[in-house]
Image (cartoon, rainbow, N blue to C red):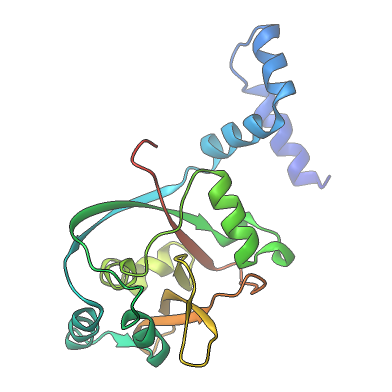
Length: 202
């Protein structure tokens, strides 16, 4: 254990609420529940609402480009795919899982999805990618310490059969909606966030 971790644990122990022995034992017996409680208290998840307006993928491309967003060629393939299903007036709540929650070697699509699903977050739909690009400016991403926000929808095959997912990206050369490799073993950098749905009951 490094020195900083030891200091944090000591400070947490100093500030624990009053608990009886039964309450303490329940936490001891349920390490997963304890981890979940600590995560929610110390690292609250950022959530946003997105309401759809019935646009098709082709309409989303046209709207983004008319507002001087940049839509990558592979992203256009995903937006034109049959798996893009437009909805109208549906409000989705999305949670952002930050890349720095994972060790570098474990920050893969498969592991990220497993963590999200264990928290009760299902995959979003590809439809939400353009809406998120319109919602988040590059400055918003910078303030969050992120280079990209990835929409963790079911990966979609491009014309070559490779799997891709949509993502919002900043690079100083334009406000991008891009496509990224969606295979299970793909590893991400720390400065990336991952978007999942939050069930209505959460």
